[in-house]
Amino acid sequence: MSRVFVVVIDGLGVGALPDAAAFGDEGAGTLVHVSRAAGGLWVPHLVSLGLGAVSPGADLRPRLPAVAAHGRMAQRAPGKDTLSGHWELMGVIPERAFPVFPRGFPQELVRALERAAGTAFLGNRPASGTVILEELGPEHLKTGRPILYTSADSVLQIAAHEEVVRPEELYHICAAVRAVAPVGRVIARPFRGSPGSFVRTQGRRDWALPPPRDTLLDRASCNGLEVWAVGKVWDMFAGRGITHVLTAGGNREVADRLDEAVRQAGPGLVLATLTDTDSLYGHRNDVRGFAQELEHVDRRLGRLMGELLGPQDRLFVTADHGCDPTYPGTDHTREYVPVLAWGGAGPVNLGTRPTMADLAATAAELLGLPVGGEGESFAGLLVKG
Image 1 (cartoon, rainbow, N blue to C red):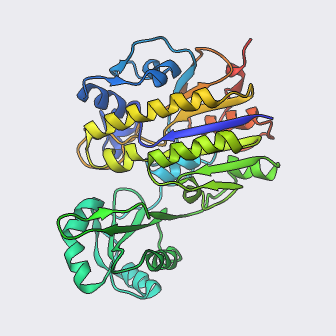
Image 2: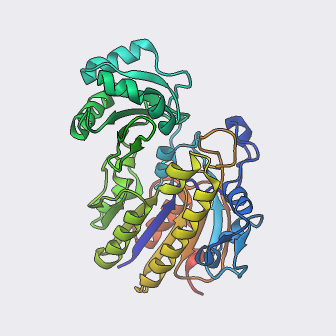
């Protein structure tokens, strides 16, 4: 009758991986750099879970000993994107990196995309989403042509003003493009406002490739367990293996939906992603915003920890990659991620796990599922002796 809750703090890296230089990320360290630049972070619940022990160079307060199991995990997948990070956390390690387009999409592909979408696009280049709206938003308002852009990730993003292209029409365009786009995710980016003050709305939607093999979500639901997806999780797994969906936009909504899941979920898995640290602050090099958001996340985690009253409830706090806002550029960073476990054993040092898939193996064992997927379980370290 176990329940396993996994909370992903998007972009919360805890130090560069040994191969970070190959990704242009040597010296990255999201938590250390954010905490120092902010003059310290007040995150008592994350400290109690062991985040300070995982990243001893970070300035986290209060300085208390860990009371929960804690460690860090390496990403074994050949990338640093959201999709491969989530898949690896749930037990599937992609063998190859998703294709990226650092100079924009080839013209032949753009023509195929336009045929599928039934419209012509503006843009077609790597860009920050907020920057390209200011650059091309006025022309979009005049022509009605959606804005096409990408990033360092394997994504194809299409932005359109809600008064020019209705969100439902934009979603239809993105779904059509998904059939021909050789990327990990197609993302709809509706926005509002006027030149100089464009604002992206909460109407974002993602169309991701489905995982190539069964994830922990598939195995849990196939064995009669509930699988709750909170926030953008449904998108990351193309709906596969999910029995209950709680949609949410920003972190406040995700935290509220998590509270609902605590009250309503039966035996099984609840997976939630808190995105604002990454999307609103990491990608925009907003160190102060990242720090303030992490402190808010800490308060909501404290509330969540107090609500998990069942003796078989387990909470894991982790991340999908780094997104160091102090690092040059606005892309993700190749880093270790924390793994913090609340419930069961006390302050156990889980060490450095060779893959994020160890979390999936551990959750599977706690849920009584058959052995499967990749990674090695550390569930035995979480049992009180």
